[in-house]
Image 1 (tube, rainbow, N blue to C red):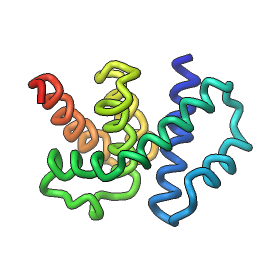
Image 2 (cartoon, rainbow, N blue to C red):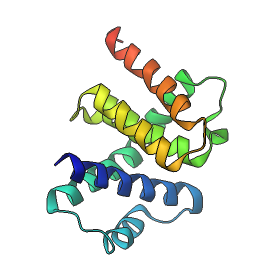
Image 3 (cartoon, rainbow, N blue to C red):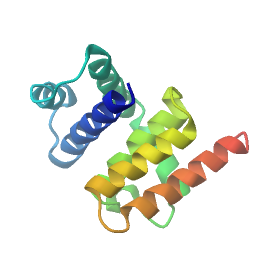
Amino acid sequence: MTGERRKARILAFQVLYEVDSVGHEAEVALEHLLTGEKLSEEGIAFARELVSGVIGNRADIDESIRRFAPAWPVAQINTVDRNILRLAIFEILFSKQVPVKVAINEAVELAKRFGGDNSPRFVNGVLGSVSGLLAAGE
């Protein structure tokens, strides 16, 4: 299921990127991207959950980004990094289906694959701060 979840995360990231960059409806983008993917029903359900969870909690997620990356206004973070952070923060703070370290590792892998040279370090730093918040019990 790990490979399936990674594929679902990639798909969810692509949908979130499309929604954020060109304003398409999430469900339309998701259905379009699913036509080219071979995901199990569980993988599809996981991708849907990630997309709807990020969109439904976006204001709170963006507030977390503002809090833990104060030098970077959310709108000025590049679209790739912003949506990787949104996805991972949803998994860490709201979904809690995977251990925090797994969510961070998956986000860093997405940043390596889709982001710029500094993306993995930036994503890891912000998410490390978010996880520190959890460890502190806030």
